[in-house]
Length: 184
Image (cartoon, rainbow, N blue to C red; front, side, top):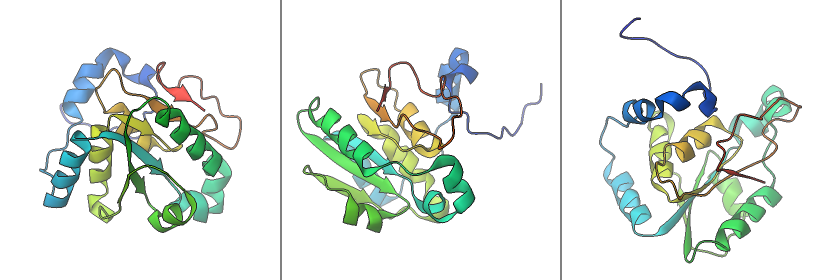
């Protein structure tokens, strides 16, 4: 067994690593310290009933081949997920992560406190996953990025809401979601 290796894939199914969950959590850490802005957001997240909400558009909206496979999560999905969590969380505070924050601001209406996290760009984008993982609850897109952001939250009482339609086609998603996640 090599000591260094590179694994390529989405890995968004616990069936691949359930028996090694603790080792994965131990290895999958963020080595660099967060910037001052990300530290401030992490502190804010820790002081609220934080809900990460991830909207992926980018290539899903702009690349016809990608859109034909994944499609986009509907506004109805996000509104249903927001209602679901608002009924279960006393004082929800939403932290919005997106590769198209202008579209989200113009189209997704949330009647609760919101913070749009839009400063982590390019090589710093991984910090969004770090911040997502610190939130208490999650509304994820059909995206491995937000899947991992939610999964890395180690809290057993977290609520994760995922879209039931992960792919446009009929790909089998039976093992895509952990058993305790809510699929809408």
